[in-house]
Length: 251
Ligand code: ADP
Ligand code: MG
Ligand code: MG
Image 1 (cartoon, helix red, strand yellow):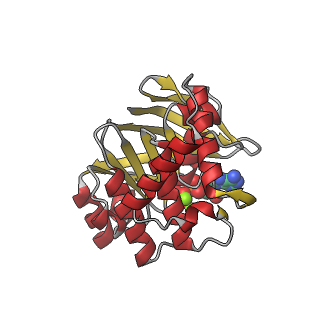
Image 2 (cartoon, rainbow, N blue to C red; image 1 turned 120 degrees about the vertical axis):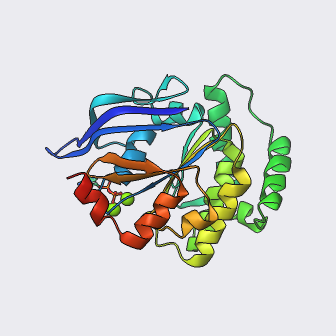
């Protein structure tokens, strides 16, 4: 599914190397977690994969089922099935969440050469998904993210995922200060959307999140690279001992 090889990334406007030969493979249907100290480049990785401006890839590759992510426009990546949570955090006055989701979905379908979904079919589909995820129908009518609480934004993120049906979901929860309720929302949502054809890359500071979203694989990232890979027990080890020993082993 996702295959990253020897990825080197620097800031576009500065002589600062952030990713320094990162290797990562996420298999189809698996949930991988990335943990690591602040500043190790976790968010940069998610930005680069989704195509945010400001970063320059100097070496290496990133493909999704063979599709070259790094050469593609952000919209093409989305159409191929890549989803970055908080890709759409903007508040849009006057545009209902429902309209926004339908526009996003149809843009992706169009890019894939598929027919647009009718308003009626969309309404039916989105209502069903909202119901399954226990998301209040009211949220569909409200303007996108306007005045949403932290928890509502999280719910919306899960709803976006459910509607767009991506095959690769990247969630960067590092700096969002998840409280216990939000953590539960995110983990329930991810668990509900886990499926054979869908992979997740969950980036987090919080071992606790991984008690709820039990990952198949845990990676520790430091200084622009994955320095250790293991099972869920690796997250517990980090929780107990911190990163110091791991960093020393890799110094
Ligand atoms: P993490 O998510 O692991 O905390 P980041 O990817 O946010 O790490 O940041 C990695 C390093 O790159 C940090 O030193 C950060 O300050 C720097 N960095 C990332 N993006 C930028 C940017 N746009 N401008 C300046 N520094 C950046
Ligand atoms: Mg940070
Ligand atoms: Mg971060």
